[in-house]
Image 1: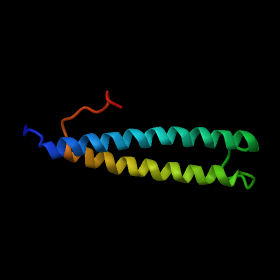
Image 2: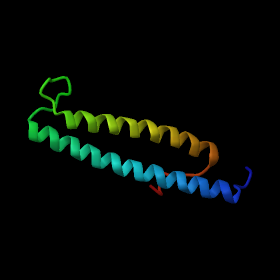
Image 3: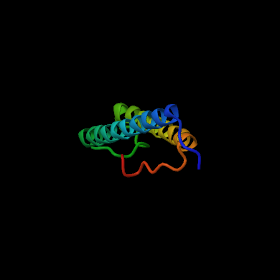
Image 4: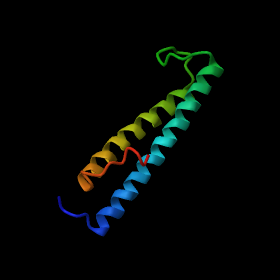
Length: 88
């Protein structure tokens, strides 16, 4: 196993911090979606009465999930042997 350069260590730490922040934002979006669904009394996105704000928040959440998946692949490329699961 090759030692990590200073740049790689910094980049890996920054990526991990960004991923953690995005996961936190997803939790906030999920809470906001639940609140909008509760207010409207509709939790089925296929229902025409489903709140537009909840749909928009769901789309944002899905985009963030895709971003996280991409960042995690980059993190694995930079620091394949690092165990970030305990740090999140």
